[in-house]
Amino acid sequence: MSDLLERLRGRGWRMTAQRRVVAEVLDGDHVHLTADEVHARAVAKLPEISRATVYNTLGEMVTLGEVIEVSTDRRAKRYDPNAHRPHHHLVCASCGTIRDVHPAGDPLADLPSDERFGFTVSNVEVTYRGICPNCAATT
Image: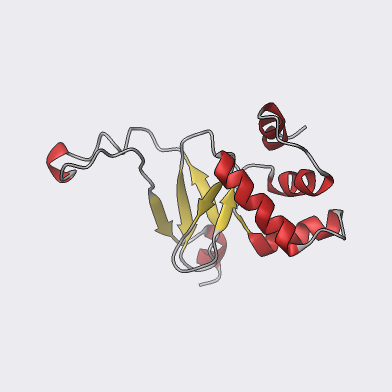
């Protein structure tokens, strides 16, 4: 059973066929699919699943904290099932590929207190940008 499915079951989330397929599509490392990509892959496994069901299921998973919405640039939101291991993202500026990265150190500690402007900082999102090896090879 996938890690995401196990986490959802552990929360007592009712596992319908549609929810199971969406969770299976999202399972894995470095998964950052758009809702339309999730829908396309889900339809291949369960032809009767609707786009609305996929969007609703993704929204529920985000609300539960089991999936993270990732927005890079002005492209479509992507869904990341790696919600329980702190990480940042490395994004190809050419093709949009997203990889999870786990740099050493604490980015929250790197923000000096005088640069917090009185904020109580609870979360840090770091996005590294560059050109992936595939795109670099074609330029």
